[in-house]
Length: 267
Image (tube, rainbow, N blue to C red; front, side):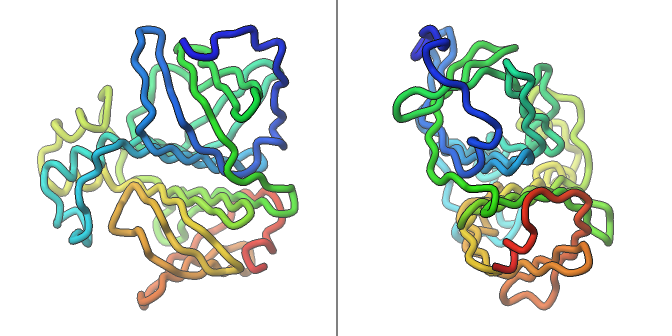
């Protein structure tokens, strides 16, 4: 496997140094399988993070405005996506990404591994599953330019995460109903008894975009019809309001945990 070298010669990053946007160029397994085509974006806050992984050969979603506009090829591609949000921890040896929100069913193994810094990349080696990933820092963020929050929607208790670092942001929102026990989201779809049930299981949003001051624009999303959507983030009295351009409504979220300087959202 690539980069199976003595990692002791390379430095280990700190949690603070991981803040910012990372992309992945490679994942490789011991049996020789490797993937260099999946688009992966990981935005790390002080400890909270969001990650979105979108496979290649994406169908054309240009005419879609919601699940009802999709065919089987669209639905299967959506179900092949991966993405999660939660908290990154470090025990001195292994980094572990806990998953509070997950596009896929709960995995049998923890998402944990070693990280080390090689010239031009960061390498991750899995702890419970042997794999190698190559990561690249696209934008690092100082403590003053990084904010993350756990959110709860006031109207129904839906949980969400927001991470913002420099001009990048990611938003993750839990699905409205839990997944059945299955090995993959694609398998879940085969167990659905109605289109509405399939849509509910797919309705987990993980979006990445750019932000300047209070304004944001979604560039990539697990729900592709939300791409190119613009809006504003407004904060007041321990709440975050997401106001989408052209929409008469807005979503209001209670901030139940915050990291970093919340004034970044109004900067």
